[in-house]
Image (cartoon, rainbow, N blue to C red; front, side, top):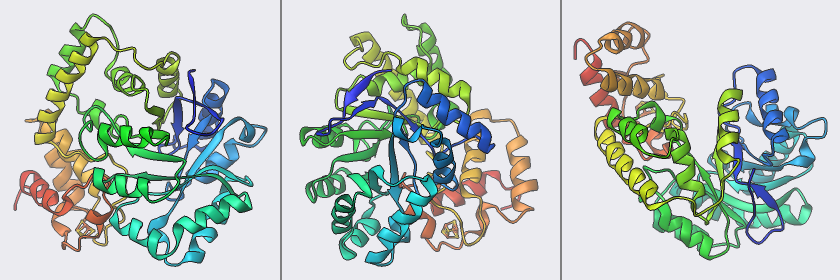
Length: 373
Ligand code: SF4
Ligand code: SF4
């Protein structure tokens, strides 16, 4: 495992950080997986209040001496905050869930315009400083899926000690992108990368032409390995998060990050990535870039938004296989969880970190998959 000095701190942090969002279904398996990661050199864990049972299970995994072997990062549910006192109330709950006295890196979660307004309105930055003084958190950070100007405004507004952004080969120039990564790094703010595979969307929808390009390249690596390699090749990247769901995936990630020094890609490797990017951009024109994060849920009309989008993407990839249409009509429409139930309240769309136009997309999905429109 490669370790890097983390910004202005003295911490040596593993370049592979375990994302605790997509745990295996069994709690025992999740605990085993977290400990397996730590036993194999991972020392950075990332969770969040809104990741279901993630903090509680991670807290259990960190018993028996594991807590002192990791830097624990978790995130404040700014979306639920409705007054200054809420910040500390949620933090105390998170400390209890994680069975710890302090959080190493505490992030204000998903600073979209609504959440950033709340942070300003309810003195969220003063809260962070106060918690450092109290020793409940050690370092202050934020996570964001938004535009580059929004990112720069937030970076410049406070003495952050880290930032977490979405970056992958498809998002090189979207959201915060490479330019944002360098902007933060130039200010000495270490950047943690999330969604390196776009929540599995990239490997699950990889076009055949991209597979051929990878198979014919002299360096034999999997697509997943190329995605990670493209990231750890950048010296500005402090940690790459990967949310594994099985020990097999974890072991593959450990192998990939065993040697993850920066500046290792050749010109031929970079040319391969550029060709893959071209194929993925074409893919994006024909599918929905949903990562399955579920930030849009629940829908007040019970629409299974991420499942509907996954079904649609599958349909587009396997056409003319009619099975997905059958599933949509016989399971989703019959079960009253289909796209046509949308009343355009807009709530889901405000929470989507990928900025998907969910309401428009649901109409497209229904028009293509429903037997009778
Ligand atoms: S806009 Fe439609 S899909 Fe989104 S929450 Fe409202 S009803 Fe549900
Ligand atoms: S639609 Fe957006 S918020 Fe909902 S699961 Fe997909 S990416 Fe996440």
